[in-house]
Amino acid sequence: MTTDRFDFKAAASALAADGWCVQPGLMSASATRALARECTAMHDAKLLLPARTGAAHTASALRGDSTHWFVTGAMSAPQQAFAERIDVLRIALNRELMLGLVECESHYAVYRPGAGYARHLDRLRDNDARVVSAVFYLNEDWRETDGGALRLYLEDGAYRDIHPHAGSLLLFLSAQFEHEVLPATRDRLSIACWMRQRPLGAAG
Ligand code: OGA
Ligand code: MN
Image (cartoon, rainbow, N blue to C red; front, side):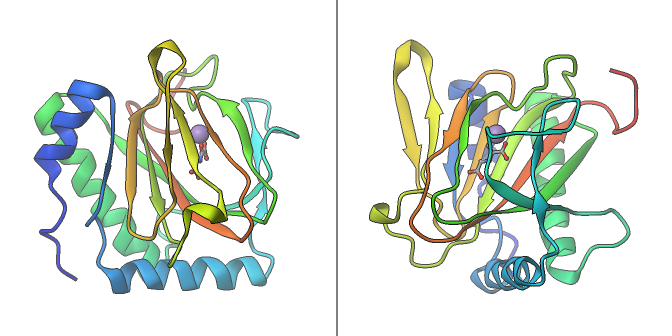
């Protein structure tokens, strides 16, 4: 896998200047395809579970996706490759921006046609551990008419629609940007990932 096509410095500068960016090149096309194939196979095998929201982990009408969390020590080769790359990015962001990010948590997500995720913030009310949200998209040949944009709300009511094209990585500051997933007309696959400023299981 080529590992030099993602511009880590550009990502860090954009994050510092604007709080968000979209960049290609985190994974090779073949590694991206391997993730998409595995995500589809696991979804077909009913290994993805309806997602929950909020600290209480209650089922919610807010989101219609199914997810599979990547488990440290039990990752497939494609998951491991993704986890290694996102960790290189985490370390680069620490170096450039001194964010103190200690780890990443990631899950596959599949939104069936018609499913979305209502406008929300990735930071839970009583937990400030999530600092950077990263969403890596797995959908080959996505067309804008397929829907499924991530709508990122900026200041003063403006928004940007980010289309979930295979190989695109969206980064944004978790505390700052409300966003929603618009329904699509076909299955929509992604890896959602959060870079955290303290380990899972720690207080707060
Ligand atoms: C999330 C989320 C966005 C996406 O899982 O919190 O906002 O584009 N996902 O999949
Ligand atoms: Mn979100």
